[in-house]
Image (cartoon, rainbow, N blue to C red; front, side, top):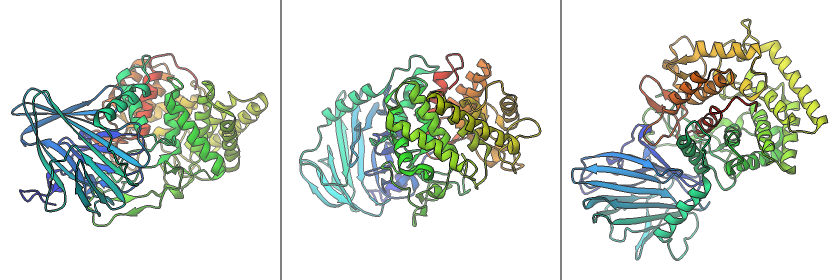
Length: 590
């Protein structure tokens, strides 16, 4: 794929550091846009489909709108309360903006990508290049036809591109256009990708923009009672963008972005993790009974009623099985990583997900948003805990099977929470079951120092062990909870960030990045103990672990100030949202 200068699109738009990518999402799929206007990643038609744009991970396919003058500086911002992004380039001649969005809410079978070039004070000259390549770059565009719009195919996908009628075909099959927009004027592009034949008429750009703006305006709560209303609105928008019409929320928009260079820790997160969805639902409930709470309850309840004690840790957004992990061949991968599709989580059991489900249902019940069939799902989760409470599981960090203290204590927290919303007889039974599990954890996972340890044969501290007290497994003044907080703070905190656990004797930052989720857990744990100023400091520190688009990943490299792992990580945005809501008021028991 070469341009007139003999340079391929992959060479024109190599990968950038993650902090410079922005997310467009419509609930059914997401796109990453780089600082030079290149859409480097998008799967179509669904989250777990093959990518149609994949230069991010060394595949083919790219859609670029970039200033014709190669000398420019980049910036941009989200329009408040939405995932409508404005790329902003300052050239030697003037200012160019590109307004970008996936039409929202998305259709499950068809992606509609909107791009609008706006010239500010001088003519805007941009180069536009479109090369859709389904199957992670395997399939070129074929059957291209030029009329009122360009139409064609790429692998199993149908495509139509409006606004690029003046484009010409390059020698490698991509479409190219040099465009000049007069000062104060604008030019719209609409790209449709579908797994079905497209309707006769393309969507009108103006109407598609109006509908998208209106849908985002309806979607976003005000979050007036928040430590950071703008950050809360942004995180809610990210979570909404990652949540399908089925109610399922994917863990991240991407796959194969390494947590650590050449360490083999790169995964496919384009699936709905039960635990992550519960985190998001509980976070939303901390502000009010907004739509994403109902979506989380509905999806998790459905999976519990279908699978009971065989509940899988993760599903596709359609409720199907996560495919087995495999490696794509012939792709270079994002620097430091390799390309993996699917996830081995489908072979795991994660006991804590059952406790998290009960916490989610209890949060919904407090808002009177738990109906009769969802109560059945809660009872199913309790029965599953009874049946599997002693089974080894992969734990919150998806490691080797053990009887992890965190997993069992989260079941305790869930049982106590749902008992608080249940009928008197059930409440007593469930509290008794919770007491029994705590007694067992105390026998085999209470460190001689009086804190919780990870497992009977693993006496290390763990950032995840802050969560049981936050969620009510024990009281805030329980000496085990206080000792655990102190030990975690002493052993795993550095520079206002928190690491998960010690892998070995190396300095913490040499083993992995700080875990941003754990930083927000520390903020909540300190707030629970009345240490308000410190809690806010932890919130602000971890809130800032991002780039200009304010997207958070799983890990933050404290030394290099870089984002690590897949982007954006939903559960991190969920805990930001919850922390911002809870830190502005006195501690409340969940």
